[in-house]
Length: 252
Image (tube, rainbow, N blue to C red; front, side, top):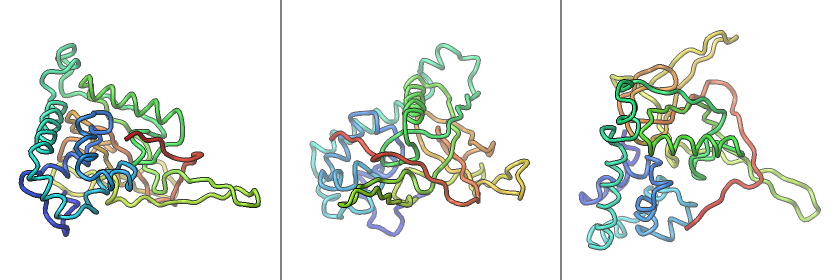
C-alpha cells in the first residue's frame, strides 16, 4: 500500500522515506528520528514529531533539496542501513538462543500500547509498559505480536475555562496521517473476521502497526502479506475513546 498516491513522488534517491516513516522503529532509534528532524525541522515540530503526517505536508522543493544534500544523504543512508539490519531475523538474540522456535510467535495482549505520541491509543502506565515491551522485543528479535484495540478517537485533551470549569476536546484519528494500515490476507484482500459469541453478531477489521523485525501473523489469525509486528483490531461498534490529562511528551 502506498498511502502517498496523489502527492508529488519522492525523489528516487529518497524513495524509502515513506517506508521509514510508517515503521515505528524510528521512535526509539536516534538515526531514524534525525532523518525527519533534519528533513524539515519546522514540520517536525508542527506535526508533533509525526513523519507520516510530515510527508503529506512537505514541499517538493524541500524534498529535492534534501536529495541533493550530501550531508542529509549520508544520514539517510545510515538510517536505512540500520533499519534494514533491525528487520533482519537471521542474527538476533532470539534466533541465536532459540533456533528451534523459528517460525513461531508470541501473542501479547494489552488494552493499550504507548508506542509514540503520534499514535495516541494509550492513556497511562499500562500502555507505556506494553509499548516498552514491544520495543525491547523488537531489539531482541523476539517474534512478539501485540494484540489490542485501535481507539478511533485516541485520548481527549482537558482544559480549564476562565470560570474554572473543566472541558474536554476530542480529536478523531485521521488514519492516513498516522502509522496505521489495514491488515490484509496473503492474497492482498482486507482481513475481516467475525467476533465469536457476540450478540448481535459483529465483525472485526484488524489494523496493523509496524515494528521490526518481520512477522507473518495478525491479531485475527489472518496471514499477512508483509512484515508487521504489533497489530490491533477494531470492531464495527460505536467509537471508543481513552483519556489522558494532556496527551504528549516529546523531545526534539
